Image (cartoon, rainbow, N blue to C red; front, side):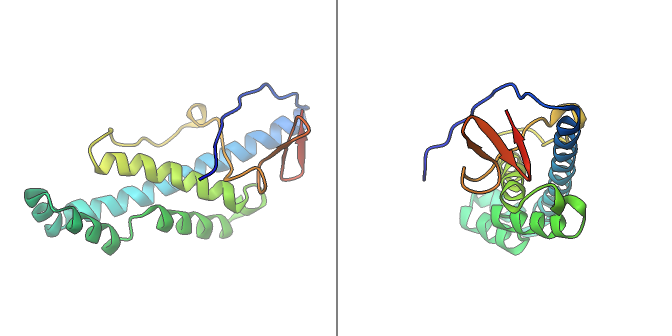
Length: 157
């Protein structure tokens, strides 16, 4: 796995670029909330299953894994759902596949923590609580080169 990094910097934007960025973040938030809703439905099916009670009593992790497969709860399945959702509406014009997959992974990690009782129930994000997106690499999607951020036709300083 390659090294990852987070770089926070102030963008110099025109009002039009700022409007476009706000639309991108808004659509990313909508997608995240849709993924969270779908993931919570799948978790409810897992928790309501009689096999879940049995797995909990016996601490049978293989049974838990089987339940996850049975109810299609995995990072990959949420990524697949994200791509289908993106392609079925206008999100596809503003978010690329790699960004959508990372949003799905973000939702999956929150749901997985909740499933394993290592975190509280994930919350749906309102406008003020979703302020960043990420890409899978610097090659596709969000690109940072020559001290500029490039994404979907935008070139930001």
